[in-house]
Amino acid sequence: MNSDNRFIQPFFEFYQDYHTKILKKPLLVTGLIILMLMCLMAIFAPVIAPHDPYDQSLKNRFMSPCLEYPLGTDQFGRCVLSRLIYGAQASIAVAVITTSIVVIIGLLVGMYAGYYRKLDGLLMRITDIMLAFPSMVITLALVGIFGPSLSTIIAALAIPGWAKYARVTRSTTLSIKNKGFVDNARALGASNQYIIFKHILPNTLAPIMEIATLGLGGKIISIAGLGFLGLGIQPPTPEWGTIMNQGLTYLSKAPLITTTSGAMIMIFVLATNLVGSEVRDLMDPKSDSIII
Amino acid sequence: MRSFIIFRLLQTIPVLIGISFIVFSLLLFSPGDPAVINLRAIMNTEQPPAEAVAEMRIEMNLDKPWYIQYWSWLSRVSTGDLGYSYQTRRSTFEEIARAFPVTFLLSTLAMAFSCIIAIPLGILSGVYQNTLLDHCTRGISIIGLSIPDFFIGILGIMFFSIYLNWLPVAGYNGLEYLILPALALAVGMSAITMRLMRTSMAEVLEEDYIRTAVAKGLPKGLIIKRHAIKNAIIPVITYMGTQYGWLFGGAMIIETLFALPGLGRLFVESASTRDIMVLQGCVLVFALVFVFINLGIDILQYLLDPRVRQNNE
Image 1 (spheres, rainbow over the protein chains, first blue to last red):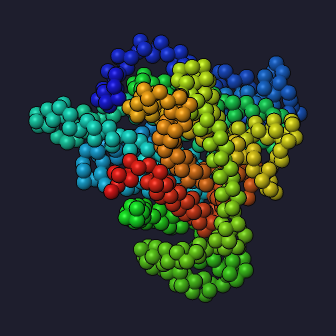
Image 2 (image 1 turned 90 degrees about the vertical axis):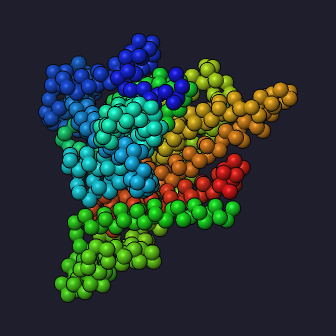
Image 3 (image 1 turned 135 degrees about the vertical axis):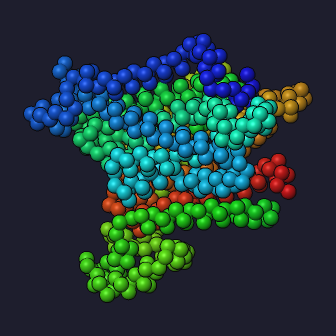
């Protein structure tokens, strides 16, 4: 299928066509399974975790791995494995929420910019300006000014993120707004809003979903980065980046705290990258770039 | 040539205005009175007298509507007056001037590492597509892209500094302190550059002029060196330029991890202590560096690529 078709194929049709092909992609299946396991782990953390992640016991500080504490304990004698399992909750929840916000804003801005020529110039200049700031810079500046509360963190991650999605949606919209089916709808008397939400939106979803999958991994890294700088989700709430940062002080004494939390981040992001790049490969076998 | 440069310069003006608005608005939203912050530094007291604060507020136009405040802020900034640090009481300009060289060296070294890793591997996997080498580089690049740079940094510290004792753990006292952080930054960047180089190479190798060269009987090595690489590398250079621009602001976690006194660490510290004028100054510098590096890259591309030159005339 050529690269033009990928833009005019509705999202759901795409999955109907391809669900058999998905099974033939071992890397894609692996990525999906990892993501599912991670999400299940976050949801069922209270069932899976061997200990309470907040349970301190000072006489058990820095224990090496044993049957009771499979990954040992941290500086407060808390079970490292349980903290990692619970840590998935905060990281994944914040990443999913911010990615959804960013996708919605990006879709709306991109569709309107592509559909209405008058808005286009202004909206695209705004995205130009947003893209001039490395996203982590805006995030950190906002968290610095407003303090690291959960809502600030979500907003600070979402504000710089939407510009990329808006760009992609705009170019998809531009490429389909003069296609026959849109003209037909217009000839039948459909309003602009109807055309945008019933005809353009379903067609922009497929390319956006693939960037969103890659973006989800990026958000996990940003959240962990904030936590690592001490400006993320605040302790004692377990979060992978924060755990990593706290373990850093005891790197030579208890290296497992930092390395295992880093590995969790890596596995999650690897899974999103596998899914994202394999889905792209399915839709457009000619492109092989993994650029987000 | 000159008209192209002038045209590109004019294009950056709206972006610069937008940037200045965003950076200025950081000050509007922030807690704390900028007049008090400045006076604490100038008069060197914890509590500047109320009359002086009132006077300073008038001098800085803080009692006026936001657009007059914006204008007077812009005219102050254009002379290099970015206010004072709440923490150290030094001027922001001084703080930034002190930190900039470290970040500049770190970014440049990271770029150099990334070039050395990514470009040869990208060319090789573009030439030998779908071979074992190609699959390996694809695997490595996906993994490289998935590891956060700070995790690579920590693994590097554990292996090279603690286990092998080859490189210093943290701090800044000469170039050897930058090797590990630059490598940590380079891994993720080169993952993307490598794939881009491969794609670009693969595309160029299908062009007609390559087929002509093959038909002429030129040796393969010569075709790749003289015809393919020259054309394939142009989009890669453009992309690396953007990466370089991002790196100035993107190295902050690595700078904090390795305790390097660069811009990123200054920025993180100002964010953690709500040192608003320094924070604002850093954001401004990051954005300006990004815009001007991109401008430079566009001009470079114009000089390197005759096709771009033709399209713009």
